[in-house]
Length: 173
Image 1 (tube, rainbow, N blue to C red):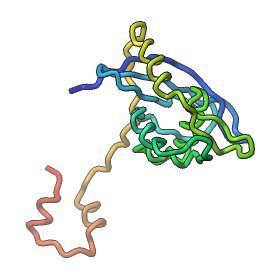
Image 2: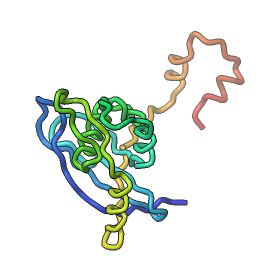
Image 3: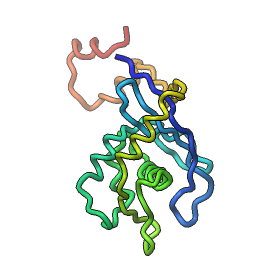
């Protein structure tokens, strides 16, 4: 089944680091089953970010056992992503702060505490679905795969022992 998204909210927020510039742009999305998602849509400054749609359920799972007033690092949120950009977790932390789901620690710029009220936030977001517009997230571009030739196959496997039959199977059709 193809997932259809609605864009409930478009926003931007400042980054967390002391020397960072620009904004992180994002959307809050929902699907036909009323699941919520975040989608990072832009970065004003340099730096890669994952264009994946992040299930809010994954974020909730990451923080479910954290006690109130316990300092947490942005690194905790790496678990919510498939992509491995080093910026993902910090950008998501900035978004969660902007949504008032995290608060900054007063004595540590890159530490946060989990706020109460996540269920209320979800409820408020889902109320926006009636006026939301369909949204198709941008997907990462797939790089063109190299063309397989006899030379490239031989280069990759020159040290392996292949039979003629194995070599034939590797040839492009």
